[in-house]
Every structure is written in C-alpha cells, then in structure tokens.
Length: 114
Length: 113
Image 1: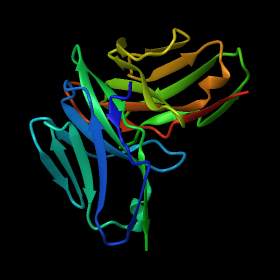
Image 2: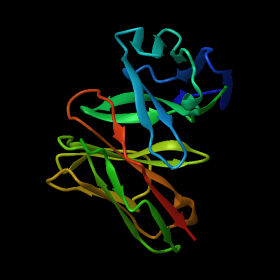
Image 3: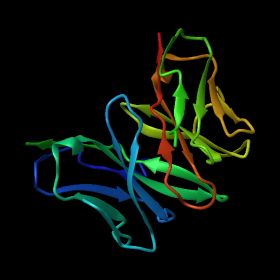
Image 4: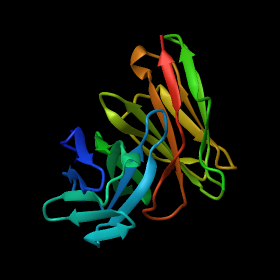
C-alpha cells in the first residue's frame, strides 16, 4: 500500500524553464511534508518542507504547494539549472506517539538540459 | 558543523552472516532514524530511536534491530542475512520535538552474496 505516490518516474526540462514535480498521498493523518534531492551513492539532501496548516512555502528557487483537499503537493523549481538534475523524493510525516516516521514516495528523476 | 556520519560506506557479506552498521548524528540531535533504500521499494522506514529508546518501528522482520547509545550514536544490526537485504541503508538525524526536517548520512551500501 503506497501511501505516498510520485507517478512520474522521470521529467526532462530545459535550463531556465520551470520544473514541476508532483506527489499524491492517501493518508489524511499526514501533517508535515518534505522534499529531498538525491544524487547517486549519496544520502538524500533536505530541500524544503511544509506544514499542513500552510498551502505554500518558498525558499529561493524552490516553492512547495500543498492542496489538502486533493491530497496533493508539488515542488516548483524556477529557474531550473543543470545542477538540479537528481532524483527528487517527496516524504510525508506521521507523528506516532510524538515521534516522527517519514513515508517516502518512489522518486522522480529530473534531468535539466543546457 | 559535521553532518551525519555512517560507517562503513560499503560492505559485502555472505548469506547467513550478520552485520552491524553505525551512525553518528549531527551534534545536538537526539533522534536517529534508519531507512532502507532498494530499487523496487524506494525508501522504507526501519525504526527511530530517541534518548536510547526505540519509539517507532516499520514493517521489517525481527532480524533487523538497532540501538542508540547515550551519546546519540546508533547502530543497526541485521542477522541471518538474505540476498534481499542488499540495499542502501540510510541514517537520518533530527532535533527532538515535533515535526522537523531529517538530515541524512551518505548511507552504507550493503551487498549480500
């Protein structure tokens, strides 16, 4: 049962354009969402997060949007750069007895071409 | 500030053996979580430790265990290794209390032959 889904395994974008990565979830108990970037043979690097009490959070070129009614979140990267090429994971947090468990999607591979 | 450190980076073991992986969290972080990454299953939560106590556990068999020491360093042990245990094992640390971002180490690549 995949509670967090990233339905696009890959995405190709030209440098300077917008990259939009999507994520859907099924568990309405999730109250905190995160995006991570991962290069091969490295651990995931935290990018940006959003609490369920917000619908948008920005950090430089990265913006995350949350639509709770649709159980959908997206990561916008503007402008996209070749160095952004990596696998992006969305994760949702379930607080269980006060301690966090992250549930990850299967990732979307972003390729930004010059 | 040093990041999350995992040792060793690579490991090759034989079926039936056991293995211990180590994780040193970011200084001041008391929560340590472990995740398994495989090509087919993505990142799967194993367990979380906080102040030397396991507070959360994923859906893995009892062959997977862990512990946390008083200095917040954590170890993960897998006994009676199976071929399917081959994966990247990731450790993440975060500050205590509420929902906060978890910071990951580079992982230990375990290959079972």
